[in-house]
Length: 293
Ligand code: NAP
Image (cartoon, rainbow, N blue to C red):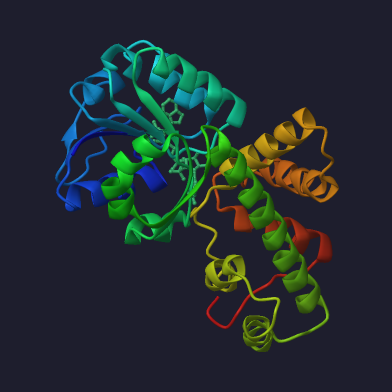
C-alpha cells in the first residue's frame, strides 16, 4: 500500500520502519529534518508526503501538532483525495478529533483515530495494541498496516472513541505506576529487599503489565525516555479536561498531576515518566535501586 508516515519520534520512527519492512511503499516526513527511515522516501512537507498516498498515518506529539500537520501551510489537507484514509496514532483530544474528522470528511476522505499502547518496545517489535475509532470499512482497509505495526486492534466505536478510550487507559497506567513508585519508596525506607519484593509482586495479584515493563528500568535507575514524562503529563491533562467536560471527578489523577507538575519543575520532563519516582525519593530521603544499579 502507498503510505505517508508523519512524525518520526520514539514511536513513529519504529512504526514507519516496520511498514517499510513489511513491503509497503512508504514516504516519511518529520518536522525537524534529517531523520531517515530505511526503505522509505523522505518528503519535505506533510503535503508532499501525502501526495498520491492511499493512507496517511500520523504519530506526533499532541493536539496542536496534529492540527498543524493536517491543516497548517503545506499540510496534508492540500493533498487530500477522495477515499484516502487518515489515521492518527498520536494521543490527542477526543473532541478535537471529531472536528478534524469532519473537516477531512468534507473532502471525501476517511478519518480513523488509532492511538496505541505498547510503548517504545512494542513499536520496535511490531507488537503494539491499537485502540481504534471510526467506520468499519476504513478500519478494514488499514488492517495490513495495523498487522505490520502491532499485534491487536480493538475497535471501540465511532470516530473519537479510540482517543477517549486511550485516555482511560493512560489514566490507569499513571496511577498504577505511581502506586508502584510509592511502594518501592516505602519498601526502601523500611529496609525491604527489592530483589525479594519483585518476585512476590509478580507472583501475586499486584502484578501488572506496567510493573513488568517498568521494573527492570527502575531497578537499574535507567530513566531514559520510553514514554517521556512530558507526554504522560499531556495525557493526564487530556483526561482531566475530558473529565471536566463530562462533569466527572478524578481525585487520584488530580493528585498525580501535581507530582508530574513538580517533576517537570525539577527538569525531568524529557526523562521517562518513571522519573516521577525521584520526587518521592527526595521527600523520603532514600534512593530506590536493585542489584544492577
Ligand atoms: P516523541 O518522541 O516526543 O516524538 C514526537 C513527534 O512529534 C516528533 O516527530 C516531533 O517532531 C513531532 N512534533 C511535535 N510537535 C510537532 C508539531 N507542532 N508539528 C509537527 N510535528 C511535531 O513522542 P513519541 O513517544 O513518539 O509519541 C508520539 C505520540 O504517541 C504522542 O502523542 C504520545 O502521547 C503517543 N504515544 C507514545 C507512547 C510512548 O510510549 N512513547 C506510547 C503510546 C502513545 P520533532 O522531531 O521535530 O520534534
